[in-house]
Length: 497
Image 1 (tube, one colour):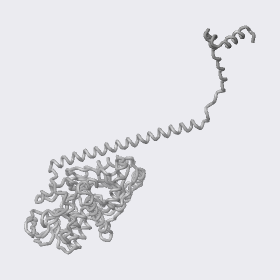
Image 2 (image 1 turned 120 degrees about the vertical axis):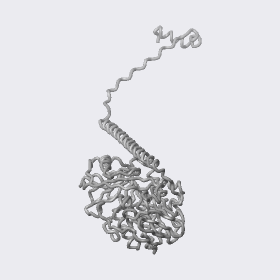
Image 3 (image 1 turned 90 degrees about the vertical axis):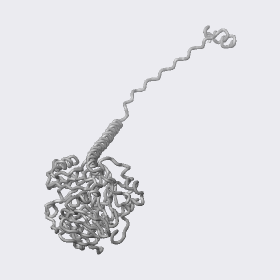
Image 4 (image 1 turned 60 degrees about the horizontal axis):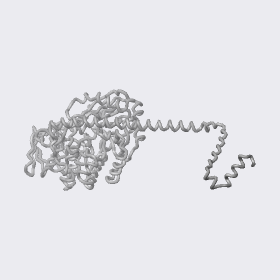
C-alpha cells in the first residue's frame, strides 16, 4: 500500500506527471501492455539493451496494485517452498528461488536515493506464526539456508514477543536482507528510469484489439495504431476485453490497508521492530512509517469495494492484536487488486512466437515482477531461456464468477481456521504455563516443609518381653522313648531339684 507522511510526495494525493496519450501511429521493437511494476521493468531493461519500446497504459502509471502496497521486498513466491519442490523437484525449485532472489536484488539496486530520491529504503522483514510451529520452524530454516542459500534467522517466542508485545504471535523467521520501500515512489521512479533509458510511456491509451499473426503484430488503440515484433502482456486483472482469456486466468483479490494518525510513544511500546511484519497465514501485514504511524493491511475480498469501508476493520484488527493501542485513529485507507493464479505461481513466459506474458504475481509482487521484467527483456534480446522454468505453471482458468465466490468463502474459511488455530495454540500455552506454575508452587511447598526440621520424635517405648513358649505336652510314647526326660520331670514336680 502507498504511504502518506509529512512529505506530500509519499501520499496518494500526490499528483504524478501526466504522460500523453498515443495519438499517432508508431512502429517499435517491443510493445508492453500495462504500466505496472512488471511492464515498466521490461520497458526499462529492454530499452537499456538497445530496443525501441512503447508502453501502453489504459489509465495511469501504477494506478492499481503496483502503486498500492506496503513495499516489502523479499525472495520467494506465493507458493510455499515445500509445495514448490513437490511440483517441480528440488533442482528446478532451487533455480526458481534463485531467480526470486535476483528480483529482490534488482529492486534493492534500483530503489536507491541516487536513482529514486525519497524512496527511503529500510532493512529487515519478520514472518511470524500465530501458532507454535516448533519443529516445523527448524525444518523450514534448514530448507531455506541449506537448499536455497537464503539468509534467515529463526526467532524463538520470547524474542518475537520482545519486539511485538502481543500474545498472539509465537515463533518467527527473520530475513535480514529483505527491505521496505515507498511503493508509490518506486513505481513512478521506475517509470522515470524507463523513460530515461529511451522507452516511451503512453497513458490513457487502452488497447482495443490485437492481431497476433505475422512477424509484426498489430495493436489498435482508440486514436492510433502500433506495430511491434514482440508484445508483452504485463497487465493484471484489468487487461480488458481484447485480452479477457488471459485476465480470466487470474482470481482478482482486493487487499485493503489503512494508515494511522501519529500514535506517539505508545506505538513504540507495542511494536519495537523497525521492518515489516507479516503472519505466515497471509492475514496481517504491517510496519511502522514516519516513526510513529502504523501502516496495516488486513482485509481481503474478491469483490471491489470502497477502501474507506475497511477502515473500521483495520482498526478492530489492530486492537485485537495490540489491545494496548486501543482504537487507533485512521488517517487514510487504500485498496488495490492483485491477480492470484490457481497454482499460486506467477505467469511468465512466451505464449506464442513474439507474444509474452508477465502477470499473476499475487501478494509477492515486488521481487517477482522485477525478475519477470529482467527475464523477458533478456529472453527477447539475448535468447535467455530461463523463463522455461515457469512452464509447469500453465495458464489455468480461475473459474469466473464461481471462482470468485469460492475464493471469497475459502478466504473466510482460512481466516476462521487461522483464528481457531491461534485460540487453540494460546490455550495450550496457557495450560502449560498453569501447569508450570502449579509445579513451582508444589516444589516451593515441599521446600518449605523440608526447612522446618525433622518431625518431633516420641520417647521410645520399652519393648514388650516375649512370652515363653508353652511347654510341650508329653505323651506316654514320649516317656517311653525318652526315659531320662520323664525322670527329670518327676524330680521337678517332687521338689527334689
